[in-house]
Image 1 (cartoon, rainbow, N blue to C red):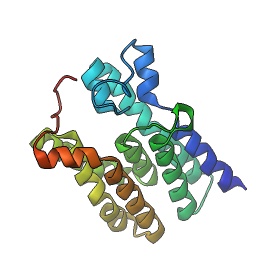
Image 2: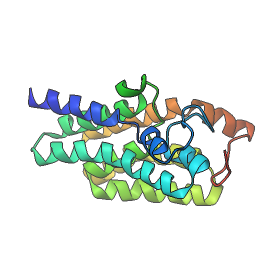
Image 3: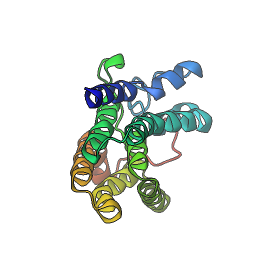
Length: 196
């Protein structure tokens, strides 16, 4: 019963839309209605600037990180820890508190992986920074980092269940980025720093 409670709480944690809450606090447009329409840090950056975007990024990462760390501290096995992380991620994608209209999950995925092991978070973040710095495409950086994340999990932890769950997380992230992938292929994707 404890693991079911943890998974449920992780989903509810993920369902807190940081982008919407921060935008309301800063009196910014609803990120679901303006810019790219995605309630995430990149869209908040376009709509409201660096401070609001940084708070969104931090909040989205923490709602993945905290449930996973809690499960770790409670001594849950790797499978349960992975399911807790996946539940938090799904909460971000499909938040019960915001009509199931969530973000694409990049920062929350980073928080989840950092909860698994801090080195994973660093590896994924370094990958994102490198690709974003070279291309100025946040979405492409996220896709490359997501694609490599199951490999990072396997190489650093050697845990089959966590690797499979990370693969599921990466597949969901790719699914949510379908419009971005199409725009990237057409050369129409917005670059980092472009105003919405």
